[in-house]
Amino acid sequence: MITQTTTVAAEYESTAKDDSVKLSLVVPCFNEEDTLEKCIARVREIADGSLSLEIIIVDDCSTDRSLAIAKELEARFPEIVVLRHEKNQGKGAALRTGFKKATGDFVAVQDADLEYDPQDLKRLVVPLREGKADVVFGSRFFATGVHRVLYFWHSLGNRFLTFLSNMLTDLNLTDMETCYKVFRRDVIQGIEIQENRFGFEPEIVAKVAQLRLRIYEMGVSYYGRTYEEGKKIGAKDGFRAIYCILRYNTHRAPLPIQFLFYLLIGGTAAIINLLVFLGLLSSGAGVNLAGPVAFIVAAIVNYLLCILILFRHRARWTRLGEQAVYWLVVGLVCLIDLGATRSLLALGLAPWSSKALASLIAVILNFGGRRFFVFPEPSRGPWTPQEPGASQENS
Image 1 (tube, rainbow, N blue to C red):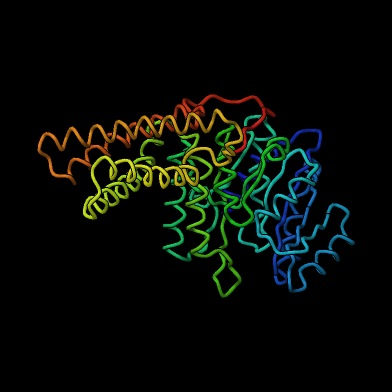
Image 2 (image 1 turned 30 degrees about the vertical axis):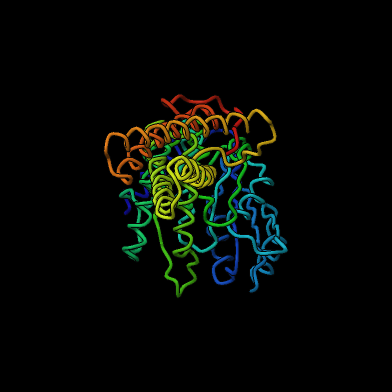
């Protein structure tokens, strides 16, 4: 342990510059009266002659003494700024508020619950100070520091979420859900944060990845809390994280990955197509009626799932051209679907198999039509670094 501490100190001192840099720490706070003052005391200890601090505490409408404690700290220490939400909105909303007010060279997240050691921040800023990185993540899964042993299924869930995120961002992170994320200020202030709760983590990773920034990762210590000790994240946040990973990544993912996810969407629509088709046939409708009706119902389901998960999430259809292209694609694929179904029936195949094969063809054509004509957007492609401060297209 002495060797590790000495190495960390030497690493930091060797990169410290003559001129001081400022680190803005945004501390989202909701009902943390038991740990807030201790947290701020430990954060203030990392300041030195080459690293000054700005500590922005964002009270998210706490119902305990957290705000009063924060105000007392603000009165005592000039580097502390306290902001407050009149209504509880969540961690992501608190960070959004804090990031806007940050004035430091670099900006980091510091939870108020003492699960992370602020001393690690002195190492995390090193790649930023050296000009090597634009963003640095602290990983709880690197073999460094001390780690409290807690929940196996939480650990497994974090690794799964990181794996899913990496698959879509084409990054090789080990801990996507980590609290310790340090940014150049112009980077984080140039990103629009939409998530209000813990969905912030997958959202920010997705948007940083799309900017093609220089991302580094370093091991950090972790002193996790139990639920009895105040841990707030739950199962619903895990499901929200999965949705956020899909929402903020799939529309810019490499083409093969997009097609993989479209198979799930298209497969769902194809099953609905088949069920509606067979239902109409059994009720006495002819193929010429059952085929188009079933296709249109499936196309509506397909469209809604595409907007929700895969392609453009802000399509407003304000331009006549957008609507015309969409209905043209739907109409062409509908005619092909009907023609393929009739041809296969004429060859003697059963109705269910004829419609299933035609639907498979329609899935492929639908993906191509939506991806390249209805919702055209460049995929991520090979990794190339983007110039600092370049604009970002919002998801």
